[in-house]
Image (cartoon, rainbow, N blue to C red):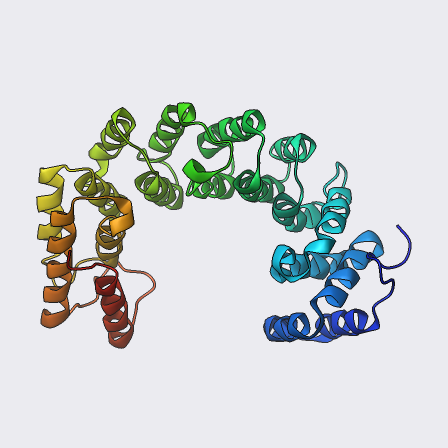
Length: 344
């Protein structure tokens, strides 16, 4: 590709803005980028696409970051096809792994079709763990916009294996996180839910990396299920309601309570009575009680009452909470969680 990408040719403003980003310290780049997008999003994106085709690695990495932050579909949708083409050129076998790891997630946002899905599938077998993790990110974004049910389900199947079978914990962590909104992906078929539940259940078992366990239980708790599939989720979570890991225990317990398990509800409310209750229980109890989760209204009212009592009595720091929060931050956080729970 010669010259600038896009109909108007070279864009001096975009080139100058990109050069300024290159010179700026990393900590100040985000503010500069926001200003540049406000002033001339199209020019900056066109320059970033040009850099991706022929710049050195350092410049390409910055250009990919610009594409990731610029939200092309809203800022300059006419350049989305150019972005898909340029990113396809970056995400090829033999590419520098550092570039691949940066580009694959963005590629998943803008590329489409079975060929793009096949590229992502292929990259999940890359020898470099960071590339495999980036391919997982790309799959998450790709399937969220996809319209190819058979290919979507192939991507789902790959993730259900990676979450426990990949040898690198960072990749397994990325895979566990990719299930968050899977039930809402275009092309997702609920026939795949048993495999998803089973995969996350395996990832929750004792002995797995604590971060992977926490992410797995959190995302299984958030998974939208009904009928007999809800019973499958409950069965998978039930062994972990007394887990030594607060995140695992909190989300397992709160999800069971939201599914109508009265014993789990009573225990959750009892845990919330402690003035030093771990904030994972507060977060999980609130999230599982918000109206759009369709949990019992009686549970929502009782959780709201428990959190208001906690606010009145004073919510102190739990010794195992990391990172710690200041008393003021904890007060604001508790106020926010209570505000999410209506009285009805």
